[in-house]
Image (cartoon, rainbow, N blue to C red):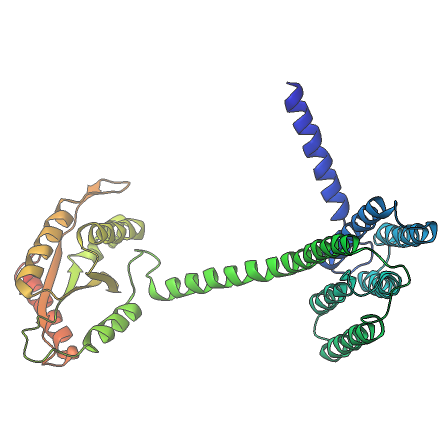
Length: 375
């Protein structure tokens, strides 16, 4: 019980801390994301100052400790006022403070501790934080580049004001590297997360739009547009030379007396019939086959690589299943039948002629009494 309470209390503390850091500025039309990044960077730098002071107190003089305390206080105050000032003002104060601090530390302890690499944090932060402003970004990048080169030429070969042992330099190099990578990770993670989520949403949205463009909304089957695209992809395949190639079988089918269903039972009942038949198509037709709503109560069924005899057997199963189907309506349970016109396409004739032939066979089946397959 005590462990549970401790976990809840620690969870509440973390939540309150996260809410406090993530609080928006009072000014309107300000980027909350930017100010949250700056606050996290300020927290990282303040912790970094604290670690440096604790680790290096035995060897540093009082002046250096006071120097670190001053910057600690400056960045702590900047964190506090970030809730009242504009984000860009806080950003520039942070940049100026960091540049002064970088130059001061390099002057005090020399080039080898790696503090100059914090310049890259400032560069990445500015590029992510400002919208457009391409000229400003280029000028600021050039300024930071020149600053780093100047620091290199001034301090790389000169003795620092406060020489450090090799072990101490290596320790500060490690601390600086960890802090720099942490700051860069914070910037990249927060600013890239939204763009990645947006990109993912765009991909899903485009896929949804494509599905809507290719799908009949009522039945969930492919629509006529997608059927024509699929037919075009099938006919684009060339017939292999010297081999018997079956091509594909094509069927156009129609619900018998569908108008009477709508007239007698209402359009809701007609929609249920269409959905029921579409469900049978999905259930009975294999993965390599294709079913689409051709228009109204007409459907187009395709059997790639399948001759007419095999397609006929598949259609017979579908015909019987549809005849057995019962659709519940407010008045009574109703049943329907379908008539099928089936033909083969062997790449030697025109596709439009094959479609017309299947259509003629469909109407021939209607004339012969419906509920049948004409092949």
